[in-house]
Image 1 (cartoon, rainbow, N blue to C red):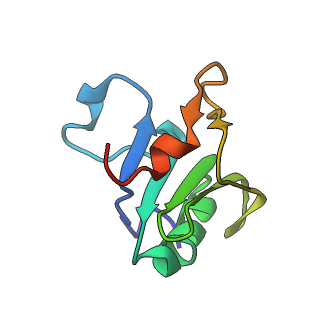
Image 2 (tube, helix red, strand yellow):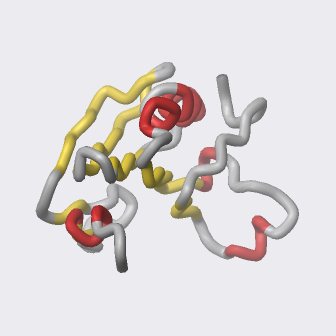
Image 3 (spheres, rainbow, N blue to C red):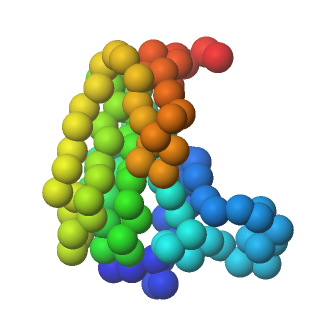
Amino acid sequence: MTLNTSEPEPDLAIVRLPWSQYRQRHPNPSEVYCLIEISDSSIAIDSGYKLKIYASAGIPEYWIVNLRKQQVSVYRQPESDHYRSVETYQDGELMPLAFPTLRVSVSLLLAQEI
């Protein structure tokens, strides 16, 4: 399973600029910094099928915002069809690998009404 044969369409993709290069095509895995899924009823797909596809493609960072459990799982270090590093947060701040000075509030990500 790779992104070459599948396009799972994440809820949010943080990709390299300029945006104009994606007008006629989707970003390649090497152009993706982080993918984010907002999960309510789709947690099984997001943490199973999609996770395997993203890891296989070498996506360096993948976040699953689990609204039912009120937690964010951060997957890093893709290897084969899984990630070697998995951390789960219920509060605090996340720092994306590609943007280490950026702070993302876990409580804001988990808020169902923004």
